[in-house]
Length: 255
Length: 306
Image 1 (tube, chains in turn brown, blue):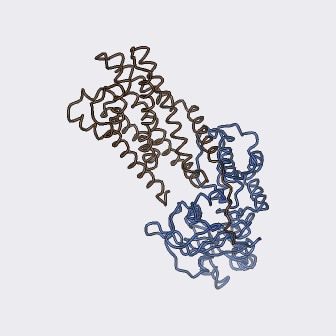
Image 2 (image 1 turned 120 degrees about the vertical axis):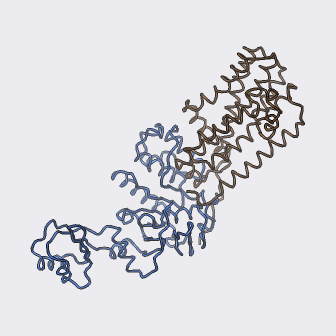
Image 3 (image 1 turned 90 degrees about the vertical axis):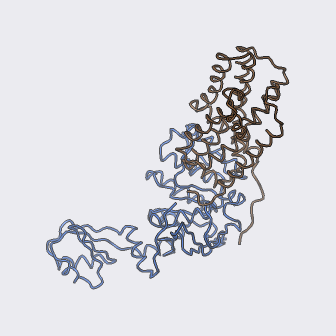
């Protein structure tokens, strides 16, 4: 009986870096995916926040909410569509039976989401500062960027669940059907205060609304609810979707 | 060392809804052997592999490999696997794929050795998108072996490979075996199982219907199929032998026999207008039917192969 196991383990850090690098290289070689993800929020912001701005505060306000819109896109698509497609082609299954640590896979996609988020925020900031004369303290620019980047995490969890449960053929359409209405109903396209009251209360159920409120607090443009409410809702969404994703991942007898 | 057991599969059953895909299968895997799992589609080959890889939950029974549970990371680090139907992400190069998979293992082969073993020299910088079907299979094989695994799972590895690639795959498998790697191989090519395996398990409808060395298996299925056109009625042909397996399909008659020359001699005595005569080795499917009949077991509806 040979029950001895190898005590030597591979270098985890190296796996994380290689996994992220491979994923990143793959994406920049697929401009059909990366360019629209980067440009959509900028384009929308330019229309609604700069060209059709209705008040002096609008460009600043919408810079933040389009920032939220910008960071949840890569999170939902990289996880939701990315994983569903890899499952569909059987690649995900091969990685699953390989000794790849599941954490490396998640790390790579989170890292990618952060990089995308960072680029989108930079582009938005550039447009806002140069063409709409948005002026903030340096600490505010930095804090908002940080909130937005970290704030993409709950959407990574939602994307992960979608990616693990959707069929690859249905994933792109389904994720779009979630992403776009979610953005609009959360008041990311137009300020939430312009909405009828019923829609404002509906927005309270949606996580992008709460992320936007946290970021808007930095410039005192939020509706005035407690930050703990917003963080609480975001945490609750994260936990629920992580659990759902784990359930989907550990479901046996996947075909 | 040769007969050290590395894996035990004990009375394993697997049910999909009402279909019994595996029925009380017990099996030991020995160190350094190539075990061929042979069977028609739907026999349960892939289900058995998936259970060993931890991709499916057992309905009943036990599987233990190197004393570890299927699906655990400690076990995965000692194994390599080639699955059916693995697409590769388009925009990574052959080299990137291999280097990434190498990083998952503590003691992988040297990169150059992997390239040589899998026959990937010259296409290392190509994106997987641009590879031919055979080249993709070779890359997937490279990913399976790159970690210098103690146990290698190959699920229908040569599907889609041309003859040359298949021969070089066989060569590499033998090399790995000499290096001490145990290999579990599913195939429905009798020739492949014959060339590679030290031991063959024949699965049909979720049961092991036969096991032994390739020579032992072949001795059991050396049946020939005699096919011809004749106007002689079936009843007269039946007089050739009392236990003759003869069927008519369309205008052809078919006789299955282990002693074809004797049957042919008698056939020409009985019938004088034989046309379009062919004698072929029985196909594997026929062998299964025979072996199945020889095993008086209850038959179950075969489970869908996943």
